Image 1 (cartoon, one colour):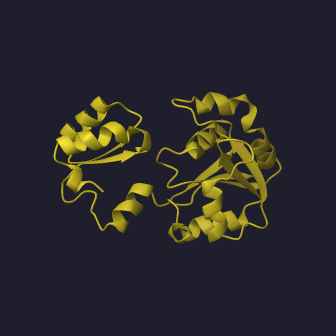
Image 2 (image 1 turned 30 degrees about the vertical axis):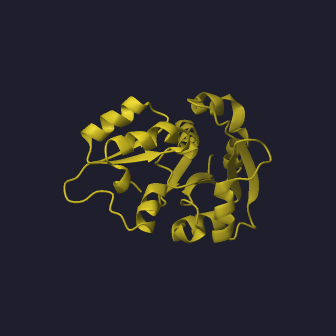
Image 3 (image 1 turned 135 degrees about the vertical axis):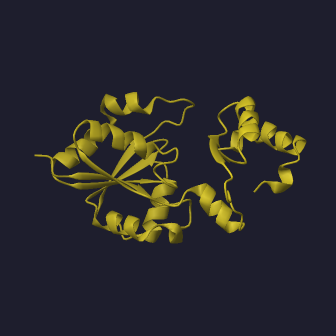
Length: 199
């Protein structure tokens, strides 16, 4: 009988004070803490936030490597055996929590893990958190949308053309993971007279 539950836990964008009380509670009650890393043994930003905001001393740690490659097929990768330690813990009745930056529902690897475990019949829950763009807007005291304005969230890994189309179709645009796109994104915003309204 499968008695363990998998929790995909959002820890917010960076400041442990932005982590929710629910996230803190779930993390402190977990038997196993899943830590996503790009390479085995390297530091995890999500874990670093979580350990500042919660007492993680009771949980066993379990790293899962998520190779950061463009258009990586994480579902296929995870079905290939990467989740075996998590499944074994759940089969043993353990409460398993996976930490993820921002919010689970926004471009999170924890989403793939939760979906696959749910497909296999395991109980899962999602613990909401503060997305990075909401924290950023709060920091600069900027509304993301007001009244009937529309809002589009787009990863910058899309093309310049996709961003241009979004600028035409939506009142406000959030561009996530924009680091590699700055070379063309900033000139585009400057050309359209939007740079001074960009945060």
